[in-house]
Image (cartoon, rainbow, N blue to C red; front, side, top):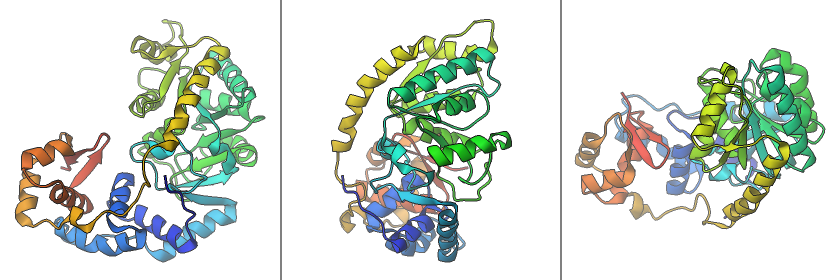
Length: 373
């Protein structure tokens, strides 16, 4: 797999592209595969969005704003790492919709180590906190890096226990935004002795919709996810679901059926999560996963090898009408769209990209797309 160090202009262009209107991580990859580099993709956005039906100019992130973001990160001692660069977390590179860029405050070397995420209830019990500390401390002693979301409760306990050996906290806002406020000291300690990671730019305030996006990074970096305590409506269960979608292992510690904070973990166990009751059990299981994960890095060509222009032949209005008529609010696989439309794959791919850039379509995991209301 090709891995390049971006120069300053390329890094700025990558940031501009990923922060432009209607460009998400999956769209970013399609644009770079089509145009070869971010500068060419940025130049193509106006025409793509117009062809897709956008009646106003698409909003492209200004170069000055991207440069200011990069400078602000540098002032903090942080930096942006691109998907194709060596310091990018290896397992994260292979998930659906991997971030084009991550902002890292602290020691990026921790991102190359084998990682296990530890998540759980914000209103954790005393027993749950103790278990989180025991497991996190043992994982660190075994040479594994603990990943968490720096949330209250279980995340905090795990981070505190893993500080001595190094921990990675994935946050929903900018790497410089202290959230929750009571974890300010822990945030600073992790930045000094581990790493703070975000796909947001510095200064970004976390909003509700950012937390599920953050959760996919927590599970995506990790060989497996340990859920210590989780209620039935819990962000930790979202992380566990994402881990399964990413073909990662989910571990859970059983809890009392009388405690609502154990309902989620007990449900995970019924659904097939691996039961662990001691750190040694978890460490043994993760050891086998680490050997299997080594094969990730040996598979596949470069992420953004430019494709032949004929593979992205421009579509006409009749092609768009056919594809648009087959789309609905329920996600459909691209292969099904190609088959039902009786159009060449290159035409369907072109239409999908144009509709996406016009804000009329969104991509879903598993090469699926759906019409936006």
